[in-house]
Length: 409
Ligand code: HSE
Image (tube, rainbow, N blue to C red; front, side):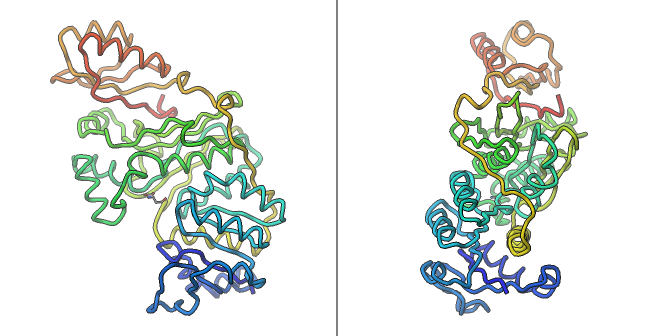
């Protein structure tokens, strides 16, 4: 019998207890052993829960109990989640986590500590919720060199962008809808400003390249400035707008970015709607492979948590991943990034000659009203910025700017 302690009995913690209980005999048959929840650590009591008698408010008895071999951290936030994870490893226990913030900030240290102690630190549920992505990257894709990852990694923003396209709703209205349905937090900034996606793509980049950037080292832009006009222009031209986390190798330097992008209808990423997530991984031998499914929610995320517990219980044949912090010089520069762009300007007097001089040949999408919408040829970031500045100096104001995804270039 494998005894586990759950840290946190919120959405994912209670889902994990439910998966372990409901599928107890199926899991036992597959594993050849049983998994028992021995403790649930939370600040609150749950008198009406069937797990009420397992609830403790102090980590000490869990750390002192030699029968507990796996600690499952689902608390969220950096502290005390990190501190408890470290203490559990120091006490000789394997750790499973769904906490992307801890993995992104302290993964290097906790993975090293786990390896030093002959333990595992697993985090499948930290990226893409229930979608298997971490383990496939470490196992099935191990023979391949991963050259790029493009991911829709946040369900809340994907729901908002889907609703804006379907119903013509404004960003504010679609956000209010997402909040009413319980997808978006009351303070939605981690989702809509791109930080949740950023943490997830940093983790995926670390697995693919062995280097993890900090959030400060990468370009992060959320979806708050996406307008109904942008959505209409994209739709008319055969594109969807999606918040995409990208990680690519430029030579041996990773480049990691988060921003809303135009995704051509022919891309599998354009078909990912509502709260679903999708991750396209590009590699030398396998080519493109796509992972799709529920990126959030209690039971889907819990299924990834339990998969990690089973991995530990069954004894994984694979070497655990390791990464180190990326120094500034080890990351590809943002200025040299090349892609096509959607630009929308106010149509001031003389705009056509000015646009032609600043941007060269472009594909016009809309020149009828008081706005000019177009797609540029592939341009470097610094060149695009210089062209936009030149147009602004001529009184042609930028209203919107969005990158196309690479596979659409
Ligand atoms: N807020 C996140 C999302 C939850 O909307 O995808 C999963 O990390």
